[in-house]
Image 1 (cartoon, rainbow, N blue to C red):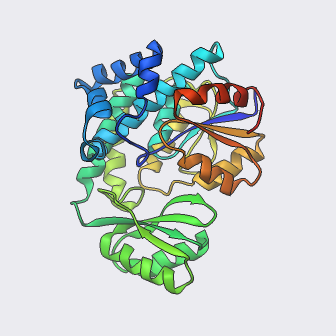
Image 2: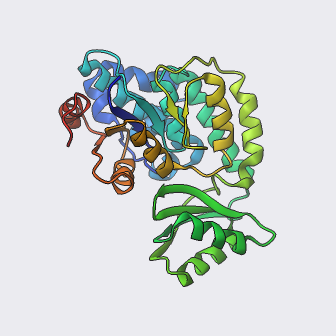
Image 3: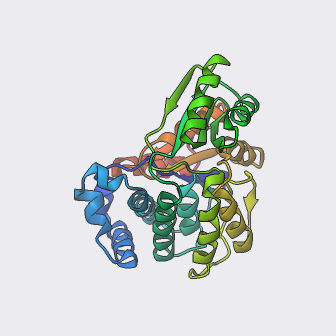
Length: 317
């Protein structure tokens, strides 16, 4: 098995027009958007290509939209590669973990699209708008951020939500508690604290009811064993069975996304380079900051395909 890893972005990567050049150039990409439209029962692709940004940003739309665009890109690369890709691992950031399941054959695109739309709607409904918040804390490590959140929480919820790189940690919870933690982080020496424009406080205890309802939704999907291990957000370890993947997805809903730990886990297990398929290039940047010297390439335009093929064949960039 090769030494490359394929990763997929999470919510926040969406942009109007994403994947349009793949749709126009590749029938397999066009089919991916059509499959998502059919599974959801409405023209998701029309929102992706012609909609307004505020519509595309809605959680229940953004999640299946990013998934569809990422799969469209993956399929075009696979066609040019001449067959199925065989990475050492698949992984994705939050929502991206569901895209990884499609790539590894665990879920069909249709089942995944319906599941993440449900996930987005449940997350949006779980906490009334304005009562939850998230903020990115730069320049402090996990131990310091965890301690700050525990102190700031009081009788509310506040905790690490995304451990994106060794010194970029997103916190999540009740809005007042997150605000208190942000001020404390500045006093403790954080280089920056950036409130995030999100509609709900993801990956914290406030999302526990979502996990229970998602588990019920899992039963409506057909689950297969993965073609390659999935490195889970919930515990940064590789999952080799559908049952283990479902358990990790359940926990991912209300536990921190241990992205940096997952990257280091994969490199320790022999991952030599990472290719990010999907809109944006956030994960490639995080990977480079986490695993120094490990190449990472973002593939989000048709003109990236040549570089991607070289990269997957071992030419590090």
